[in-house]
Image (cartoon, rainbow, N blue to C red):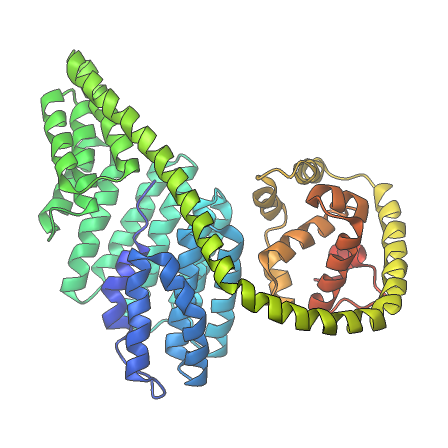
Length: 475
């Protein structure tokens, strides 16, 4: 997959794009925002935890520019986590705020994020739709650097959609379009590294199309590089190794792989790929001893990956235990007070709510009986089966069948949680209370309560059946 350059370019352009302070911007506050942006590359979790407080502070200062930057960072975080649902929500929030502040640049950025989040979640068609929206919005951005920055990233992200579609020619076309945008940047110190990195991407893709062109792009990248010890230089050496391997220049291929091995401290993913290339070329040259040596390294790396995954899991569990212990005493006091208050409220409303839920449940049963008599499409039946099995592929399949569903709900209630959107998706498929209880492994009564909360958030009238609303009433 083509390397996504978003955050690298965000840092490169942060000075020229956001250095102008708005009338309401506070210099000390802007430093905080810049620091959080920089921290997102080294410690995304810690950086993300600071964003909500800073957004509140930006709103108090009426500093809309930094508020939009912070909302943009949230989009990046969810893209980094490959969290489709939260990325869609965050992008929608960014777009709505940008419209409120009449900021075309961040409106385009909101769609730019969706280009990549759909691409990496194997929804290429949706990714390309968002590319068109990004390019349409960016036409009216007056600042040439901002316009080129948005278009450049959008094309690079869209190239991944074509990579997933196994279309290297279209992937290359997207990167060549990005190259044109980079050449429009009028600050040479910013244009140069962008060109170098995009040439590296082009070289990687052209290995599948034309070896001579691939070699030309990689050498251009190396000529423009200021740092011979970064990830893109590692990629360049690996690409040159692959080119020479295909040309049967095995000695040169080994030399380039060795250069790649010394370029940067390799992560587990890079080691796995590079060691596989070494094994491949040493087998071709009948160097059995060397092939076995790298085969052992590859196995050690696979063990290292499993070990790191286990350590990460333990770290999360330990952090939760410490957090729970420190808050336990405070929780006991707060919970005791709330239990007393809640009991009084529950006792007062219990009968009224029960009557309402029973009436609504009866309406839902009648509606579902009617719906069962109508023939469903094959694609919908397949989606229902995925939901019944609680299959991980359910959400992606649902978004393919109903691509605008999440955005339409968020337009009504922007504060919907991801779990609530997933529950709404099941309601859209007309699962009864009993079926929902089975799928979600909860009591039927809990399902009724969830329906009640969804009604409140989406302002569904009490006399309207919730299934009827999701199928016919919310658009």
